[in-house]
Image 1 (cartoon, rainbow, N blue to C red):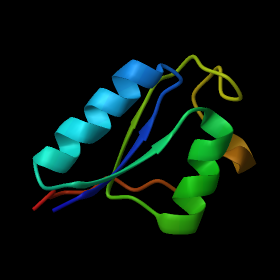
Image 2: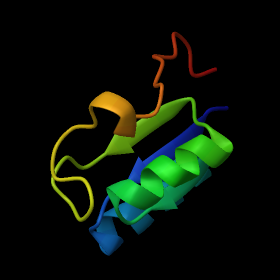
Image 3: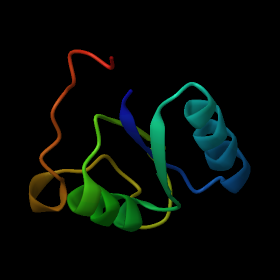
Image 4: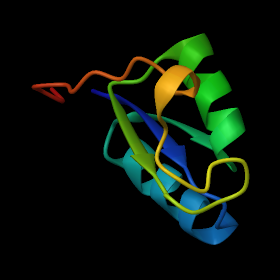
Amino acid sequence: MARILVIDDDDAFRDTLVRMLGELGHTPAAAANGLDGVRLFRASGADLIITDIIMPYADSPPSGSSAPNFRISESLR
C-alpha cells in the first residue's frame, strides 16, 4: 500500500489518522510540525502527504527552496 506522511500539530487528530491509515494497510509516518515534516519527507519520502496548513514552523503552504520536491501519485495501490 502507500507510504503516507501525516503532518499536523493536533496530537489527537494526527494519532487517530495514523492509526486508521495503518489499519487500512498503509505505512503511515507522522510529524507534529512543518519543519519536522519536511525533514521526515526528505529522509524517507512518501507517496501521499496529508498536512495541516496552519501549525508551528509552517504557517503557510511550502514555497521556494523550503518546499520538498512533491509529486502527485497517480495510484495508491
